Length: 193
Image (cartoon, rainbow, N blue to C red; front, side, top):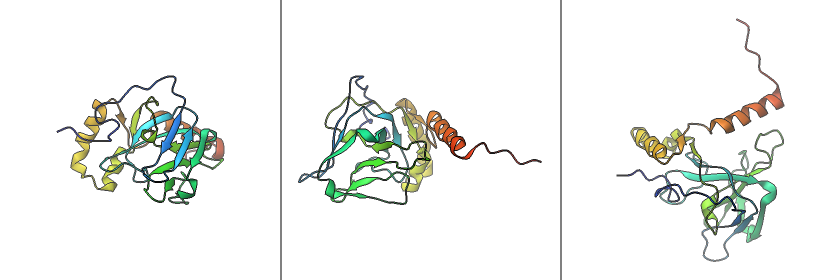
């Protein structure tokens, strides 16, 4: 039996369209849905196992990407949006009726991802967005109820889908975070022995 990860990739990762320039994200509400316009393609699209990201019913992991925050515009029913947890770095705005996370900006000048907004590309009204490139925080699915003995099969399925599994972010993103830390705080010198 094939391990199910997320409906958008369970039948294979679809190639993106290099000309994709955005679209409209829509929540699951059938009446007065929240609509958010994205005026760019997505960056760093990935599968995420953390317990904070929204995922559709039955999905083991979420599908999450970023876009520049100035390319995000709430078009309809923004009054239904509320930040899930204001103490978190990503300010995840969710629909208070259906629960879908519609956009999650980072607004912290000291953070490497300041000015980026996290979105769920599968909520776009059209296909063509850049495909997921890797899987992040894979071991965190244990925190959401997955049994540790299932992890080997999950990692194998992600590898089969050509989504390298990491237990943090991808090396490129971790390097950006570390470089930003040095920029903000300087280099940490090892203690003398």
